[in-house]
Amino acid sequence: QEDIFKKLVAHCKEYGYVFQSSEVYDGLSAVYDYGQYGVELKNNIKKYWWDSMVLLHENVVGLDSAIFMHPTIWKASGHVDAFNDPLIDNKDSKKRYRADVLIEEQLAKIEEKINKEIGKAQKRFGDAFDEQQFRETNPRVLANQKKYEELHTRFAKALNDNDLQELKQIIVDQEIACPVSGTRNWTDVRQFNLMFATEMGSTSDGAMKVFLRPETAQGIFVNYLNVQKSGRMKIPFGIAQIGKAFRNEIVARQFIFRMREFEQMEMQFFVRPGTELDWFEKWKSIRMKWHQALGFGEENYRFHEHEKLAHYANAAVDVEYKFPFGFKEVEGIHSRTDFDLSQHEKYSGRKIRYFDPELNESYVPFVVETSIGVDRMFLQVISAAYCEEELEKDSRVVLKLPPVLAPVKLAVMPLVKKDGLPEKAREIIDKLKFDFNCQYDEKDSIGKRYRRQDAIGTPFCVTVDHQTTQDNTVTIRYRDSMEQERVAITELGKIIGGKVSM
Ligand code: ATP
Image (cartoon, rainbow, N blue to C red; front, side, top):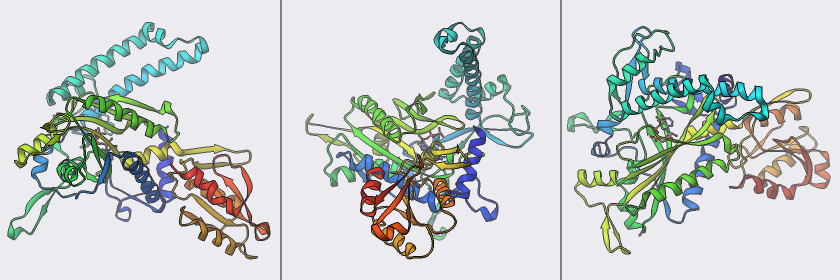
């Protein structure tokens, strides 16, 4: 599985999806650029999210707030004081790690041991295998289960109490070694703020320290009243936004899973106090359906309850996907109470309320948030789509991207570069290019061209041959089944349109 991940990273580079930032200067850590196909896939993901949130929900509207905001916003939101990661250094390798991640990995290792044991028994007993009973009786599974639960409880408590010494003690007690040096020579755990700061204005007139936003959500909160009033919005309603966020993450080799500059798609849904947990459940279910509608297999998704609720939340859950490196968070759904709006009331001195005509009273709305990373979704989609297939005579690498997300929808290929076939192919593209991203391809044999389109995930290839010039029909070839059929050029728009819409 790790191997597949390496191949996927190489594939993303080779086919113009993702490049390391500043590569000619040996790269900048945890920052990436999107190439010619990457940017298309990214735009399609954003559109798929935007349309399903803003167009399909009458009571959700959009926003595009600035990255720079008044610095007090980050004081009010709690980010200045509490947006920290607990870090620990290995004294031998001088490498820095997140203490909580080291412990999470330890938990995952124990879980893996249990799963291995179950897998072995499953193979041995076949259909007669009863997993529940095995879990309850097998001594090795029971012992590991106990270990897991003890560690989990201790870890959750340390996080909740913000007890840095205890985090270090867990690492020592669990005998966790540095992945690089292999030693257990650790420093104490320290808090490290994740926000990037810069200066606004020239120093002579007094520069102001401002932050690059670490989430898009606060831009929504501080515009709540603007949107509510100007749009005459009635609660419950939502505001959705897509934009860049920045976090000074301590990471290594996680590709675009965890970056220092990334993009978020967030929606804050404002509701009447007391109804937030119902809305939380509703959005949980809507968002899970959205993920599963892409067709990557329901069994590859799960909800994960948080070990620790953030200071602003009264409920929180992650949507996790089974990446090649295990189940990991793609999206967070949080019931943020009235924390943010109340804080902004307190710090700004302005009233941030809603007058509810049905109740005939004013209140600070409660908020349910759905928050997903564009880049993480990109990685989820591309790792689910990546396939190596053995065929009768050779093999192929194919990106089985959902047609709605595929960067190129249609490749049009003249069989030969003469006899008017290139012109005919261009004519087809000229008709379809307003509706679909089309690509013209005349280089190499048809077989090679198909492989190239498979590798970038193009769902349809159309070949123009001599018959086309006589009867205006072409061969359409489907990426996943590799089947081909002869259809009229006039049919193409309908065939492709039926598959690439939401
Ligand atoms: P984690 O626990 O993985 O650090 P988080 O819980 O801090 O993430 P949120 O603050 O809830 O994440 O952010 C919402 C979403 O934004 C995440 O589900 C993820 O998809 C995305 N995201 C967060 N941080 C990053 C990052 N550094 N790089 C890429 N995407 C990110």
